[in-house]
Amino acid sequence: AVGKDGLLNLQLLGLRKIPLSVLKMKNLRKLKLDYNEHLQIQRGFPHELSSLSLLSLKSCKMTSLPENMSIFTKMTTLVLDDNRLEQLPEEIVDMTTLVSLDVARNRLYSLPDEVENLTNLKNLNL
Image (cartoon, rainbow, N blue to C red; front, side, top):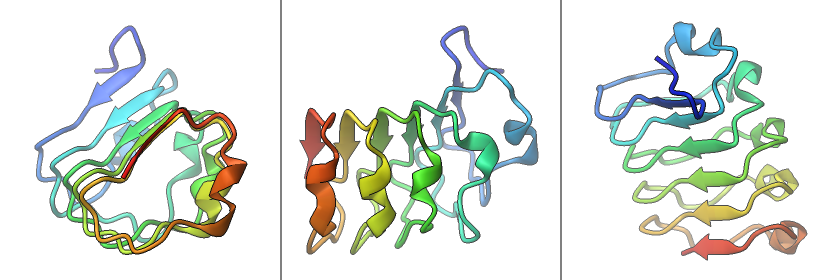
């Protein structure tokens, strides 16, 4: 169930995809999917999640992210720590509400060129 702060914690559940029931949760603002090592988001993030302020995908062994990151118009915190990402989608620079971006312990060799567009970014963990 979603907590009073809008948080749904689905860590360590062995999820392969985001459950459909999650997409129907109206007051969902924060979603933690950490340590779901087989999680796949191949067709893009569902638009029902566009109002999230926090998305945490720590230690999911993800090698790439969907291109549609710009759907997250209210996101302030994005945690991608400890995955296998080699690059971030260019669309991440459209997430201008981001305050905290954690991409430590990945295989990143560069950041998108327009990363300076993230003018609200206060915490960048590489």
